[in-house]
Length: 141
Image (cartoon, rainbow, N blue to C red; front, side, top):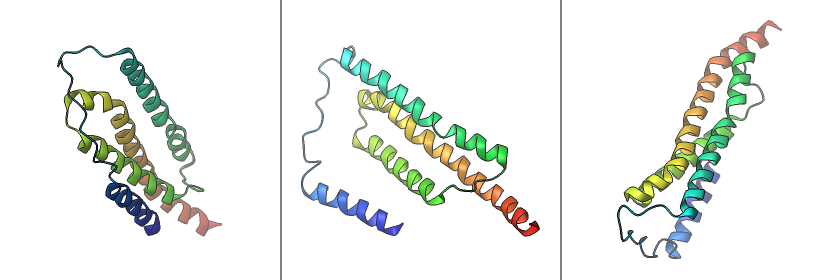
């Protein structure tokens, strides 16, 4: 697992040194009350749809774990990596720019990122709660 973090950091460091973030800052809109363009509106709608489906993908697993009172077969490493990826992605969205328009356009992706962190936290709690059930079940067999 440490190798994943090291490789991720090296990828970021190399792209940073190569100048990936040396471009100019996004130009502020000429009119603060500027209407959203059609392309921005479509992107926002697709972003909310994406966030909805991204969040909905974890729900069946959470329900299955609850019904079976078990997390057997799940890879805890997957959820740790998902948590790390979503946390760093959410942080990158917020730290990139604090411009109001940018942040409003980033809301669907922030919802997806933070929402998935919340759902993965529920699965972590299930791992903890149902681990004792697995031990009791295995010792009685």
